[in-house]
Image (cartoon, rainbow, N blue to C red; front, side, top):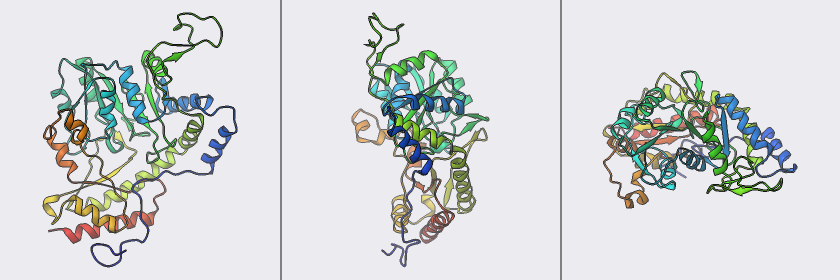
Length: 394
């Protein structure tokens, strides 16, 4: 296939924007569980939870079926209910706001910082009302939000801080791993994340009450805990004491997660190498803007996003997207503002409420970043981006 710019594309095979890395150790770990008595929630889930606590310093971890379920459980533990408002960013996957709707609350969108692209603490403060119950701050692309400032705002207004760390496993804030800093922190282990369980998620907290509520929540609200039962006639007896969900993680998913965690440092180092190479080149291209980072965040980057300067190019983002696709470079756009989605428009959300986020959305592209991206692949991505930008520059 010829590239739309003419001539041969930069490379013959397409490079995806993200991809998991599975080795023989991972396969062996899963196979061992498949030969064991446990397939669904069992000893490997508890072991995985303990490993997450060891990594982050959090007291408690609840492994769960996916990152969306993790957010739902966190909102449930925080007591979000009808009439409550929860402030979050519009530049995120829809689950960061959907989880509030699941609990009957109302998502309120605060604008982003124009340089870091994370939620702006000053904008959070502007959106607080007497109905505000919590803040869901998203570590966009893996960079930690301004946790000190946001925690201070939450303390001042008696709000619960939920850190959506779906992108940021391994990231440190002021030298401390993300996971044990906010009131509740959620992770995702989808295949394009830094480590994967296939699907899977987790919620970490230092609050024992939150922990116990989430344990019930992920398993139908059913318990054998004698302190929660209304009667206890025999050993196998159980009762449903809350309305919960089947959000359990399987033991073979947990086994994969444990094996993947052993490679987190290696994964993180390779991602940093690729990010540094991209930054080195793209920071010198006047038609591009790269994401700035706060000094407090030692970031393990999940996504690498370039922002095009539309006023310096002959075409817009969508045409750049098509041209790079024709060069066999896999791309995504992260993200359409949540309230742009038709479902949210039907709920009454209007465009224009977060102008910085909206302007960002029109100009961003996510380019490939994952552990097994080779040096040759990185060169191909850089060559393709440079070629397309040079072709369309004014």
